[in-house]
Length: 158
Image 1: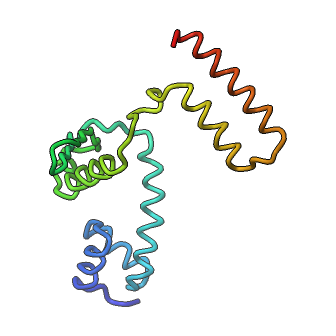
Image 2 (image 1 turned 90 degrees about the vertical axis):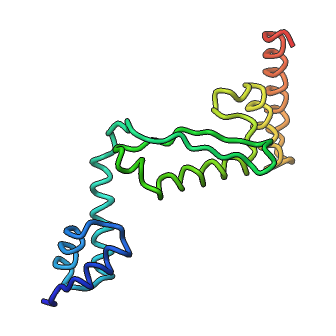
């Protein structure tokens, strides 16, 4: 069995961001091989993530991004389990990066329930037609979609 040095623990900790005690346990378990220890920690992390699945996230931050032209802005709530994580600079940076991604995506709607029914119906049938415009059944589907949209328009008084 290989001797576990503080340098090995330090290197594993730097590469995985796992606590020192867990790094030492992983190195002992894997005979001092860092690559095997990384795989060991990854598998252990996946197993422990399953245990955390139902936990509530009561802490977090409100992250924001305002584009340089001051015409586009995003604000989001990003939750976590502990205030220790919420105060971490990496977590705050994650919030900012997510906000920037949302701004770059230029979304029309924020939540799926905000998307009008007509949009989903028409988009679905148009996508089906685009996938195979020569399918004779698509014509029937487009007619059904048109009828559904017409009925929905009548109900909404547009």
